[in-house]
Image (cartoon, rainbow, N blue to C red; front, side, top):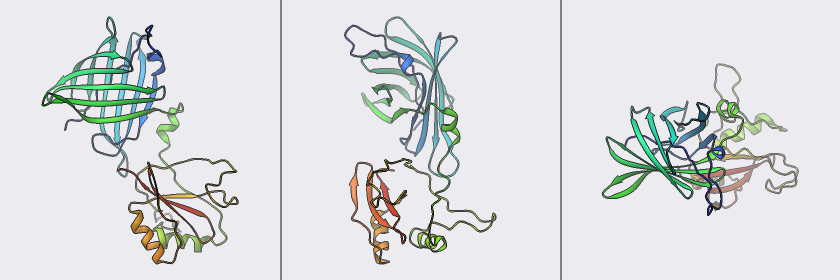
Length: 285
């Protein structure tokens, strides 16, 4: 399947019967998505900016694979657009697959429909503004007399600190106090295969698989951790929660029954010093 995503300007002129204007100024900036793209785990970015003193708009789109190791670029492209009479737009698209296409687009309500043609046939990209911080982008191909979606991403407004968003790649360590650090490190290695910190620079620390990390401070009065004296809780992503629970219980550990939420399944236990551990089997890929 060809990898391409047509980027267009989302432009809305306030109408008398419109509940809310849809203007380019609220869309300028940097957007980000962690949805799978073109069938692979990915990190996607979309940058919207004025160029030539506002005479044109440039949309820059980039997808990098997020399966494991260093990010690998999956696809990238750039569109330049100018406003035509009425609610029409006309632009040109170029991408890393070597495509160069003319694009026509029209705005209706909160959706911009962009139509294009390449060697694979006719296609559309539909941009729907869900709210001021959320943008849904869906790609369709015209097949068997119907529009069939082949890629869909939901973008959120990225942090204003763009430099930090590009340079910080993840959590490199979790440090906490312990009455018996060597014994506690061995316990985590035995039950969760988390390698202990190397004793020399010739060895490497525990390497995680790429994936989501929830980084969230909690109110001091929160009971989410259980014991009010506990200042932290580690959440471990797992591939097969039921299999791990079986191993932990066979080792004599007490683990809660799994609970299911829209973002996955969760279970709880404590380490030998009473620190809470949450096990998370995410939903989806």
